[in-house]
Length: 72
Image 1 (cartoon, rainbow, N blue to C red):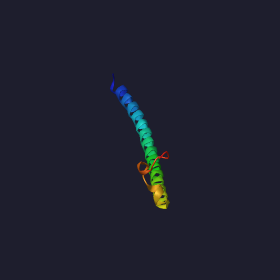
Image 2: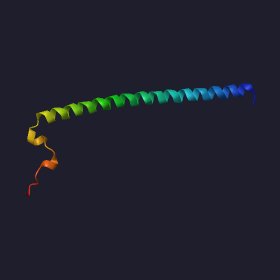
Image 3: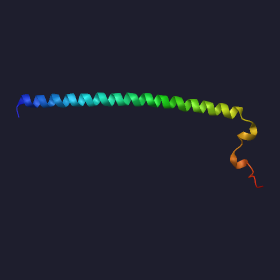
Image 4: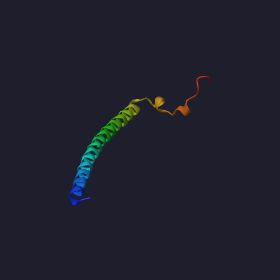
């Protein structure tokens, strides 16, 4: 194999690797955005749940284990 052929093959492989790296970077960026959105949604749900617990009467806030079954 001549040096020119080797150089061409290496340049081709480098170009392919560069394309793959750009694709992976884009996928990673999108996953980061999605993760940020999910964290924000989770925080909103936690805030909503906390507000609902604060608004609920004390009887509703008890645990299910403390409740007497209806047949007693």
